[in-house]
Length: 324
Ligand SMILES: *Cc1c(COP(=O)(O)O)cnc(C)c1O
Image (cartoon, rainbow, N blue to C red; front, side):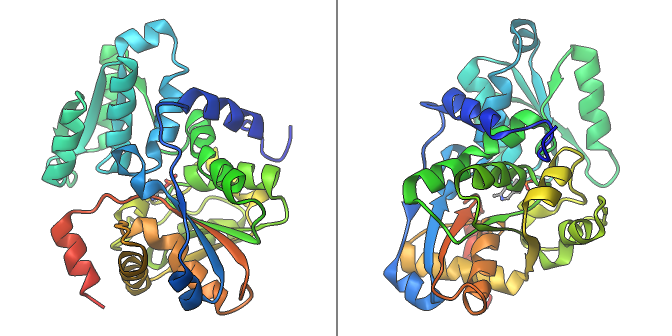
């Protein structure tokens, strides 16, 4: 087995064919003002402009499209308070597969509504007293549903790898690539694409400072778990990397960095001001760290940055932009 183990770049090429025509090939945006501010050439892969507002539709659709006829008829189940829920609901509706999504009662009303609009059945639970994994697993068993995990799954990793494939195809060689890091589906997929298409590029995952389990795991050489971190980056409040994502990250990524909530708010402001891009806090992790690296080793470099999502409640967005 290669160091990438059970997922390879060929799986990402196959995923790219499966998702074509359903998932947007998002633009790569640049800005002279941003480059001047950063002191480097920044290429922004705009998954905030993706369908359902984040890259997660890529992994969800790639996974659902590979289910058997029988699995499709029975349906799928996912648990998430965030972008994975909407991605599975949308992918399922595109493929005519029934979807059940397990979401906390106190999820933002906009997210509950969006998930229902895609035609999914929403099962609510109390995030303080109930265990969502247990609820989803029970539903899967009772109803014969297939559980679609948010990051720790080979089909999900391969789907997420199409982001960096498109980025490098569109802009050519890069000195460095940075992506946000939660459970590691995006970073693991990105790593496989970067090592295939731009092998010399430095590759970094970026997680919230308050939740640096990825950095700890990367250094320790084993998966380290932490309590749910308190951060504005709600898409990266994961407590550990996965058993599929960790080995890929460990062997192919150069380092795992962190960004503070203040740096995220500042990067969000910069994106709104220079490119009129609305990016959620988690989506700004890569840029926040890129701005720091551009002041150090990567001055003047060509840096690819994945803006992973743009789903943020507008009142909260306005408050974050004026918080700094
Ligand atoms: C899920 C998510 C992430 C983290 O992705 P992982 O594959 O869990 O590492 C980052 N940004 C956004 C916007 C997300 O929705």
